[in-house]
Image 1: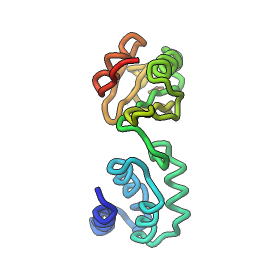
Image 2 (image 1 turned 90 degrees about the horizontal axis):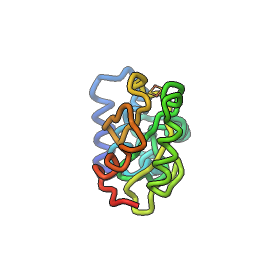
Image 3 (image 1 turned 60 degrees about the vertical axis):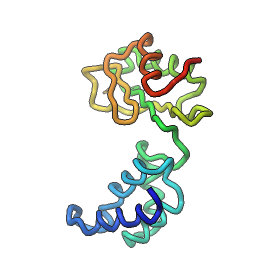
Image 4 (image 1 turned 30 degrees about the horizontal axis):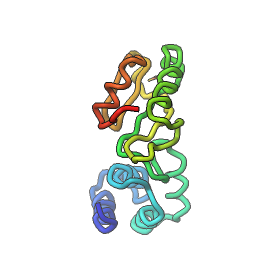
Length: 160
Ligand code: FES
């Protein structure tokens, strides 16, 4: 998506009638940006602020506050491991450690080839499948350490 296409998408949000005010389009606009750009950069935030007629700082605060938005470059695939109570009690810590070991990165980092970003995440509502993780939109439940290489390979991991 280009910046101009993004601007048009934000205009469409505003004119869709689905939101009660321009300002209430902030999070949906950020979500469009998150899905279509490697990161939410200054120009994207400027477009949102200008189309929604709100201060730039309000867009910046929203983009920084919510963990699902990336203002720093992210990998093609974002791996989110839930580390809330149910998942933690069922081995989430071991899952994070093993993913860190296999990918050679810590949580919050991206692999040098730009393929994976690893994140610890709040409860995803998948507690009955704890420990749970997602890779972009795909969910993995009752994950074991042994399953991790196969999960990574599905997304193009070539091994350690
Ligand atoms: S505690 Fe992990 S999905 Fe709810």
